[in-house]
Image (tube, rainbow, N blue to C red; front, top):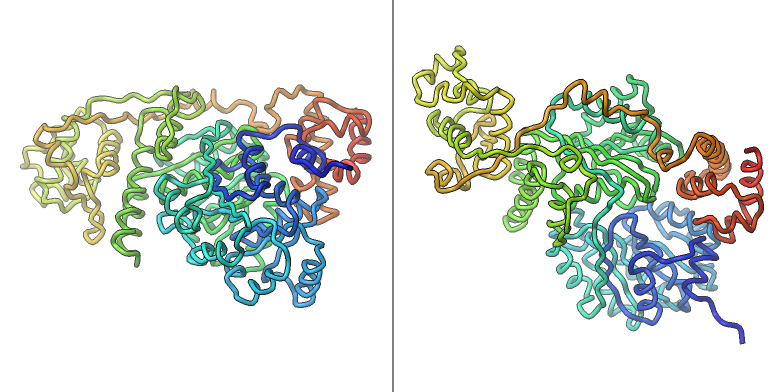
Length: 607
């Protein structure tokens, strides 16, 4: 009697990999045997295989709940390229296409069906699905079910009902960004309290985290791209639509292939720009956070934030869109006092209940604390998710160029005293003038040159005082009064600091010298080519990449659907001469070997 398919057999034959990563094998085995599971693992950690493989092992059709049509489209195409019978049921389908898909489902011709939570909540669609055996139900981006999560979607709230609608069908929920509170909440709301929890580290060691104070944001961004990411694909996040448009236009003027993306654009243009980002090499997409949830593009080499995200979770999810293929990637965040004030105001003015506002303020404070820390960024980020890093990571800005911290108690007292003695009615610029003894017309008109604090901070420069005020706002000792033109007022533990009851450590902002900037420039070549490829291997890689682009364009799919950069790099290094040798390259399963093998062997033979 012939043996049936096995997890390892599917992994190798369909997906072209020899070994599972992390807890993949344990999760697959548990769900294959009918168990419910909750999977917390980082972006790029291989969560998709945790439901795709058991879906192919169990009888019936698997349902995958996915929040975005673009994500469904990419995942379905990638599965079809690997020989899997996958489809998406969404609003993009014409009526004739929908009828054809329904027939295929009833006849057992679909192994994985992707659908949005809105679709799953329709009684008619639920009744239709009850006509076919269901292998499992996978809920992707499961943090969306929690009101404490950063991407809360009310439609996800109804997914807990699937337990009663499809009794006995194993269910698994998966997410890459959820703090402990969100994790507990999503487990409860999805009625997965009895499920087995699989928790992996949220660490992404291949991403270099860098956080800088805003100076000249556009120039900081351009310097970063020129030094690190010439010709690479990446995402630049901005908070406003206007800033997205202006930044994209400015980057174009600097010779980069940059495109805007935000919800205010015409739908056709927005889709065209997203498709260009997914299907072309070296596109920089400038976007609001309307772009990105679940984007599967593995070769995003950088994510840059020109404005402060809303929380640590949002930052980790957005930054985590870089380097999904495991190759080196960069995450750059630029922030300033204006960002802090704007984010606080957005929370205060939102229609959310007070309990939610308090949670959002706490999440923002946690992110500001990480921005201002002098310790390893990765340690601080992972601590937010309940993880402890035993040693510094060696791959973040504070590890690579440690910053100085100092006893800032006296300086903080001077700053807080200036706020108090001027009546808590002025912004940073005026307060710095008071402390440094700058006799402006405004100082004289308010007679602030008569205050005891006037000129007490002459020995400290303007930029340093701005940093001190920013750090006091970040820790909550000062608050920005939105109704009074950004005036600062005492808050939190300000009085304890003023009374000397609380000592304060502050970080000294690092300002790169021109010499340091020149030293950091390096060659500026693509990060994918810094993987120990010598000159000859680099030439082979480029030839393979050109072929991949041609094949992708012929089919109208993104290049990574054909092969990821990691597979091309492995090809360039090994340079196999026959199909058997090519079949040993990671990422080349039987279907892709048959479809593309001859073309890539021909390209390799040219070397």
